[in-house]
Length: 508
Image (cartoon, rainbow, N blue to C red; front, top):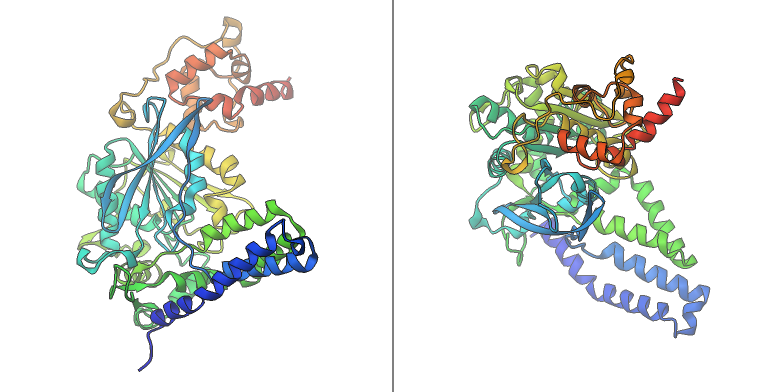
């Protein structure tokens, strides 16, 4: 009788436990500063080799978000994670900010994390970046091997139902952001809600690096999925959870197979990274070694997916291309993105994305034909790969401000977050403007980074039409303007005044 592969994996992992313990003991022994050998090249090499062995053979547990605080309007406030909605396969986490009126005047943002192997903590940087100016919620998907069979199945239809239920929980004027894999179910959920006339539709929908139409710029992932039929995947990657996990006997796509695929796509890069890690340990470069640990502690922590969800996703998204072909259904109900008309759409792609090729996410615009042009936008970020679309320095400096601008621009009129009425933006007395300046010809305020078409229109409504108007703003004017337009802290954070002064000099 052949031992099932998942069981063999578990046995090998258990068999290596004594060796891992010995390696960890050796690492501690040869790192002890009281040990003379720890100061020799030989001792440092032994310690580095022992740590490398222990880390490459361990099973990585689910990481913590670990966001104790954030800055709100220049004030450091504590943050507490709280589960506010839960189902067998997902918890909805709310990052509550304390010490300020939590969430008031901030748009509710539901970040839908990918259910594709990694935990939601892979989006820690995304949450940290959006948290200061948004009331942030995130889907915290649960490892399928930890869910007992008695809790039932979970497939793509259930995924869509979960999203609709979460949006109902959040109420009107929420905003939804899908990172990678969830782009398809998010677009499907919004399509179904619009078709039903659901009053809890999100105000905006942001899709980032998602496989809306994988026929465009196919990547290695897309090619693999399209090269085999569904039976091939069922035979080769679906396995039963072994004892003693709570999900014993559940059919899953195991996390260790997924991470093997991820590593295999860029094996040379990962081998080089571990070689560098060994060298940094020997040389005593603690900062570089710690960065390696932080990255791989997150990257190598993976979860199992239910077989029904995985197979339905492969079939719908990669084999039949059901969404762009117009044949996708949700529990027998047609999914029609063309029905969406009241939700603003923003899509983001990375120039070097090797998971979702350029154009795959932008395809959503071709499907959502009823959304007016002024309520849609697309952004292609140069020089970033898949993970750079939602994390890293370019996400923080280039992508996140555009998402925040789009959300601020398209907040539902008359409704603020958590049911609070939003400040009205009717024309008022110009801020910091003299009669002489009022006669000046209008400038294109969108030349200032952080100002989009809608924000420019709102500023014009406040009598601000030139770079000089913005350059002349005083602290009191800024506070008054931000209160009126409901984007606190943004003018200083994006340095509108400094940019405006530079443009005034440039055009002088």
